[in-house]
Image (cartoon, rainbow, N blue to C red; front, side, top):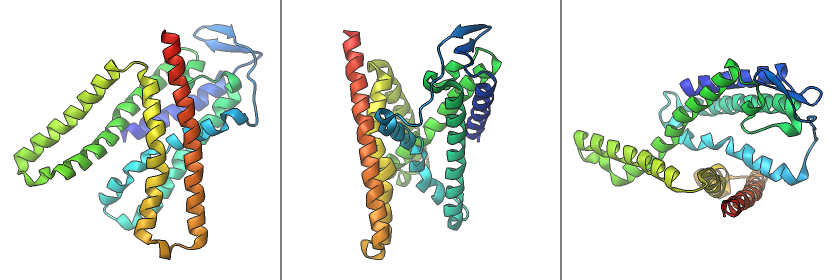
Length: 260
């Protein structure tokens, strides 16, 4: 609930700040001063960045990988389809609202994260804090999902209550420490994480859900139009993710060249 609340706060702040402080006459507000950054150019579409953008959009829905555990914990699992559909609709509306407003305000001058385009006032600081809190609360959801799978494979629930708690504690603390060690040891950590995401996202977002659906329903029970749609979606996901993978590898190569 805290993670969701921070997302809503950031959405409101981004839309409000973009409307109040857009680029005007080639200038932008930074702190108490106004800097000249050039005009905010807008394009209907940029072919060279289209596939990469779709790859980023796909990553925005990576949270769907935890829904099996959510469905398993619902009091009324039969309502899952409605709840999940509503959740995806709300998430899409938030993304579209922020992206549209931000691009209208800053166009080609849009930075990542977009709060870098805002003046350094309390609202910008609050948005940055909320983004950090969201990551701290959302990240463990994926770690817990992985830990549950590992713990299930080890069969620790059969080791007794006390031993089970100790095993879970050690596995989850060990996972967090391993991630911390990797983040400190690996150079260009953000690029490495992008590479891992580019390699795993196609499997998590496109391949696994489609494979599970066909496995549960059965090939013979799927109509030809349904199978054609699934294959088209899979091909789309793989192509888009491939562009993202190539772009990420190119960024890592450039980072190593700059370091030398």
